[in-house]
Image (tube, one colour):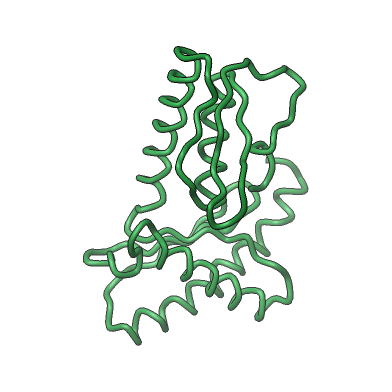
Length: 173
């Protein structure tokens, strides 16, 4: 961890604490049982709600979770005056989804290599596109995001990624 990253940790821990307080109130209002876990990974506060029967906080395709994350980020931004990039997970949904998306990206690479044709994946939110871009880069191929939100998707190209190439998926999606 660089010195700059170490300097960010207290601020990110504070973001996590603010998010935890916000989410505790929300869980109480909704009469849901869940424990909140906090961590800092790279340059983000990571907040997880763990427990049973939390599916309603995830929703179809994670849509409720995405909305809850944005509301939590807004609460943190209001309290700190700084934009928050915290990640919220509920019931391990994002970690399970990350594994599925990595497999999807790897499979798209295999199809692109076999057919020689670009492979267009289904539309997905930015977090999910970033996971796919990372999987494609790890496989040595090139990918780009195309389209407009909310229909933005990843396209995997059969060409090998150039060593010094920075594709759209390598930044903050």
